[in-house]
Amino acid sequence: MPTPYDEWFDRFVDPAGPGASVAVELKGERIYVAQRGLANLEWRAAVGPDTVFRTASVGKQFTAAAIVRLAEAGELTLDDPVASHLPALAGSAVTIRQLLSHMSGLGDYTEDPHFMTYEVRRDHTTAELVAIIQALPIRFEAGARCEYNNSNYVLAGAVVEACSGQPLDGYLEAMLAPLGLAHTHYLHDRAIVPQRAAGYAPGPVNAPPLAMTNPHGAGALGSTPSDLLTWSRALREGRVVSPAGYHAMVTPVRPADGVDVTRGLGLFRHRVRGETVICHSGAIFGFRAHLAHWPAHDLTVAAMANSNPFPVEQLAHGLARRALGLTDVVHTAVTLGEAALAACAGRFQFHTTEVLDLAPAEGALASTFPEAGSRWRPCGDDCFFLEGDPEVTFRFVDGGRSAVVLADYRTPMTGRRIG
Image (cartoon, rainbow, N blue to C red; front, side, top):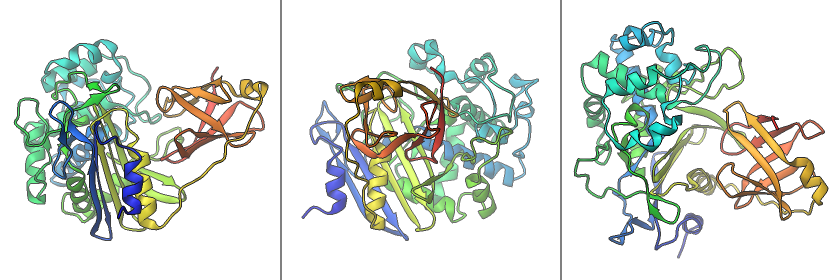
């Protein structure tokens, strides 16, 4: 008989389409491990418990842990200038801590259309990636604010190599070896990886090619949900870094503007439904991943999918609610007139640089946020919920239409009208 976990999971995956894999651990017990869909559409191979998915940016915490280990070994300090380890960045005042907390102000190589369309298909050495990043325009003064940036973790990976004298993949493999993570590796293209999932884009069609040297320390690992749970517990229990090191990783670093105080070292610390959640999501060509820990309940959930987009956060948080005996949010859509919807239209920017764009569309508001084709349904004069995920809402907060507060699977944040 299907469990509440099964019923929830079944909502998300077509058995004949790209798949997903999940694992839930409560107080040290694996209470739910399951898979749905296909790991490879061409071979009609089902996702299994050992199917390997790209972790994408969930892997940033592995790179951050490597840096913390090197700091604890006396090979560096978190407040060293990055340039003291990477001479190619001579003249930069950015520190290692600012890299790991996304406060560097450096340009993001993954926002360069040429690189992401063409260069991303071929392998690059670490030195080549550092040179590409070094040539990008500076966005803001280091430490001034937080802005998520994949370049930070490529450079952090380069620091690991410089300080350890090993390639990043070798250092990470040695760090992980004692933990028994049989399915977690740097996911090289040429390596024979048993049960490696193929990745898919909407259609579904095969995801665009991506040479896996390019994500580097920002997200080049492969893993399984069960391995991620094992990793998370080992990290929390002091088997990867010291308890003080883990505390540093989960403690947000405050930028000068004081706006975004959610970013630790490779991990976010959010407040969702009044609970602290230590987490990170990932998105990469053909894959999505999410790993989240609720410390007050010793609950950890991992969800991975071999298609992008895929609502891994919605899936994971729904499983968490069932583990904790919480109910799902239900909203009833109301009718707003054309004039009222037109007054809501516009563009609202958050400190994350994400933009919520809104346009009236058949009794709702159409948007490309959080994904292309999104629809926001009114549940009041000032409140809207995301069609397909009523846990995600925004509301106008200023008595007018100049600002919104977004509540999703992160700490609520305010967006200001920019158009």
